[in-house]
Image (cartoon, rainbow, N blue to C red; front, side, top):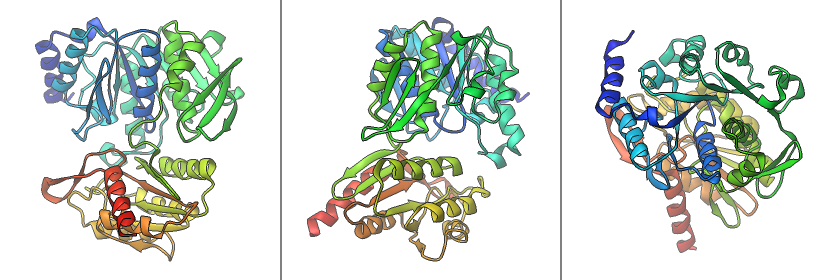
Length: 412
């Protein structure tokens, strides 16, 4: 037991008078899709007429009052979380939807929060060095489900699903795109199967029973995020039609497959930091836009974290991108050029290395032509870049792309 972190969690709940006891708290964990799923769940609950608060790596939302999360933490510290819970109670919120990270769990940030629902989006290798292996990472996620005795929402298509199915709960809801996997939960009331999935000009479409859902988001992977959210809605007695209306009002999530420029060519900004996420982002661009050329700007975070990913990210970029520009991305105390070189070894021979991230983005815009798509990955809507010695510089890929595009247009 880490008594330091545990004690802070206890003190936070004590100071703010255990506000979670007066809320229905929904915890969303997983490797990918947490922030988007938080947005979708909140959208469904709001559509049903409830007052909702949500906290994700992107923003704090208190019954419609939004504030950007600039803490660079998926899950803030214990006092900050308890303070936000108390604010939600004071605002008259019925629900609070909270993004839950593995490192937050290991530091007991989920303690003394009365979760009613635990949601798992998926599980893939991430934070491996921090946890000392994938099994430890998986066990960290499992601690949330161990703590939540009420309702579990499970991705039946995830290869680690058997691990999460073993935790006891009053009710277990499952979601799937595959008929065979949907049998893992027997009672039809507690499972949903998406059928007739297709991509159109707005985003992605799928059916549940006789209800058609249109997501106004890029990427077929968002179907899974939507299904998790629908399960939450169903667990609260919300019908499919209300879920549909709530989801269709989610027009986009900042820095998640966000189109920031749409002129002769498009510029997409996405957070993608894991191999699976990067591959899904590239596939989404191809499926939705069928670009003449895909120009990819990417890096890999430093600070000794997940170095194993670097050659894999380079290989994925080589397989999907017509042109690759490797650049700096949160190097912390590592040599940023060495990080770039480690990616470059598997990214092919035509790679450009531009250390200055602004210059890299500028170069991607200069070489883009009509019908091309530039995709900038790794930071999404993050508001700063982390450099050596704890220094942080203000940054937003979306703003930089718009600024450099404007400068190029002014010159022309």
